[in-house]
Image (cartoon, rainbow, N blue to C red; front, side, top):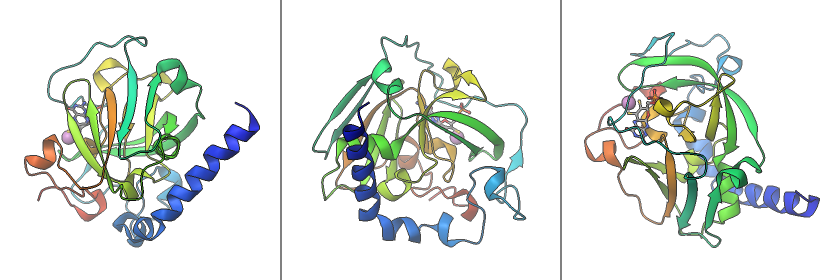
Length: 229
Ligand SMILES: Nc1nc2c(c(=O)[nH]1)N[C@H]1C(S)=C(S)[C@@H](COP(=O)(O)O)O[C@H]1N2
Ligand SMILES: [Mo]
């Protein structure tokens, strides 16, 4: 990518984060003395696991029971709704974007936590910056290839550790865990991260996703034991 283009995206990301700065800073995961849930480097002497969670060594599979089979050619990601520049990214376009690596924890509301997963993928903030959310944008609805949906506020979506990942612990993300690409939200319960992600719809009014409609908490903060509404 040429330098001009690179700088443009970085500027757009900074502008977008500046717009939501207050809300990001006021979100419970940052105002709490509790750890941020983004892996060992952020845990310090804090309790390792949010209240009511236990550590698991294996990685359970949890979903609606449909595991869409998507080749790399069949997978694409659409970003639309209240944006100035809608995106429709192919697998190779997705891989051509800035790739980041991050270690974070994965907290399922059914009480298991998997610690220190090394992820590789693209920051959601980067993809949103490309799409240029309109001034009235406030939430996202994530749609998946199995029909699943989940909503995320803009201030959570813009956090550094929210990624669209294709690799976990050095191996391509398996189909059962959402491959080719899923979203992760380490500072929220794991149902906020759509496996087999297909479309990110930028909203100007909050709407509820699959589990949020069925009584799961809309905010979903693990460090607040914020499970059900
Ligand atoms: N597309 C899709 N994404 C989903 C789900 C789903 O049913 N479909 N389940 C969610 C729930 S409830 C959890 S706990 C995590 C589980 O991810 P895992 O199966 O990789 O452990 O995925 C989340 N993302
Ligand atoms: Mo879950």
